[in-house]
Length: 423
Image (cartoon, rainbow, N blue to C red; front, side):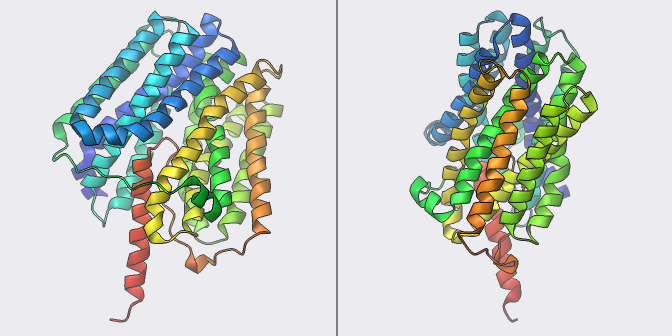
C-alpha cells in the first residue's frame, strides 16, 4: 500500500479533487434547478445528458489519446470541464444545462480514461489490486466530501459553482506535473454484444438494470431532496449516505462473494437494495429512515457492479476478460442514460412525486433479483473453488479501470495456479 501511495500519490490526489468537483456539480445542479423552477422532467434530461456524454467519451477518448497523447487530451478536456462549471450559473436554461452536461460527461469520461491508464502504468503486478482499491476509495471519498462543500455557498448564487471549477482546475496540476513517464496506451478490441449476452445473460441484464439504478442515484438524488422539501444540509447528507454505504459495504460483500454461489448473493444483495428503496418510499418523511434507505441502496449498488463483472468472468476464458470490459461498460451506459429520464417521468408527469425516485430503484433492484433467480434454474452454478477473484470497481469508472480490474483477476488466478504446481 505504501509503495502504491509513493508512486501514485499525485495521481490519486488529482483524481480525488476531480471527484469532489464532479460530485459537487451533480448535487448543486439538482438544488439549483429547483430554485430556478425547472420541472422534474426537465431536470431528468439534464441529468441523463451526463451519461450520454460519458458513454460517448468512453468510446472516443482512446482514439483521441492515440492521436495526440495523454497530456494534451487531459489538459484540453479538463479545461472544458472547468469552463462548463462556470457556465451553469450564467445560462440558467435546461437546454443549455443539458448541452453542458453532455460536454462535461464526455470530458470526465476522457479524463478518467487518461488518468486510469496512468494509474495502471504506475502500478506493478504485485500491487495493481491495491492501487485499484485505493482508486475506488478516493473516488467515493471525493463524492462524499463534495456534499460538505454544498454548505459553503448559496446554491442560488455562483460561489459554489466557482468552487467546483477551482477544484477541477487545481486537480490537473499534481497529475500533469508529477506523473512521469507518459504511459503507452492500448485497449483491447471489445467483444461483440451478442457473444457477451450468450456468455452471461445475467451479467448483461444485470449491468443494464444497474446502470439505471446508479444513474438515478447519482443524478436524481439531489432532485429528489429538493422536491421533497429537504433542507440544504439534509440534501447533502442524503446524497452522501449513498456513497458512504458504497465504501463501507464493498469489501465485506466482496469477501462473501468468493465463498458462495454468486447468483444467490446477487439475488440477496438486490433484494436488500430493493427493500432499502421501499423503506425510503414508504417512510421518507422520517429523515433518519431516509438515510438508512439511501445507505442500503448505495451499499448494494457498487458491490453489485463488481459482483456482476466477477460473475461474468466465471464464464469467460482469461484471454476474453479484457475484451468483455468494453461491452459491459457500454451496456451499463445504456441503462444509465435511461435511468434519470424514467425517474423524472415518474416523479413529474406520472404524478408520483418524490416517491417515484425510490419506486424506480425498487422495481429495478427487485427485477434483477427475480431474473437472477430465473437464471439459477437455467444453468448450473460454477463451484466456489473454480470461481475467480473479485476486484473492487466503481460504476463511475471508465473501461480502462475495468480492464485493470480484469488484469487483477487474471493475475490472481495465475498466482494461484503457480502455487498449485509442484516445486
